[in-house]
Image (cartoon, rainbow, N blue to C red; front, side, top):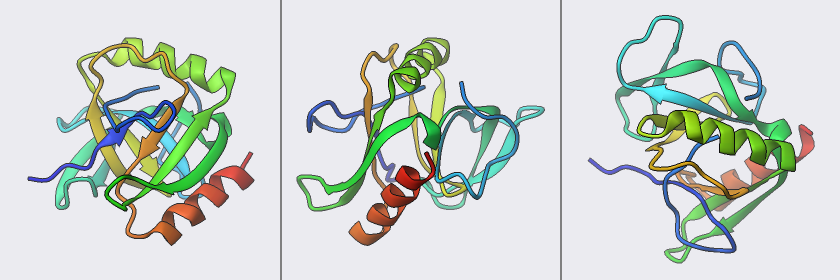
Amino acid sequence: MRRRLLGLAAAGVALAALAGCGSTGAISQSNPFELRGATTVPTQGWIKAENSDVPGSVVYLAPRALLDASDVQRATAQKDAAGRAILLLQFSPSGTARLIAGSRELVGRQIAAVVEGRVTNMATVQEPLTINTMALTGFKSFDEATRVAHQISSSR
């Protein structure tokens, strides 16, 4: 089973694992980006969603988003070394603080990136994160990643 990486990048470094206290409630179709705690085990009060990172699988998302588009200072589309489209997100100082705090709470558990209401990436948080940049994979094209970057930038 192929898994897309939910990556963290600091100055163009390789993609890795991640984490990130923002909005509440259901997954927002209008918010172009959210970062939420996640599990594959049904959990009361958590939101059931399809995991497009692993087609046909289900994931349960925390009812509260750790971060959302308002925490992003800069969003750009780029290509990785293999030519695949990635979305590079640089968080604001307050977003970075939420990412650090959220990652401390999620060590050993999963986190999911939700792009336009769809779970695009999941990863296990290995250790608290202290960086302010994240790279997301899983876009069908460079144009799609560019469109999402523009949506995130215009939602602030």
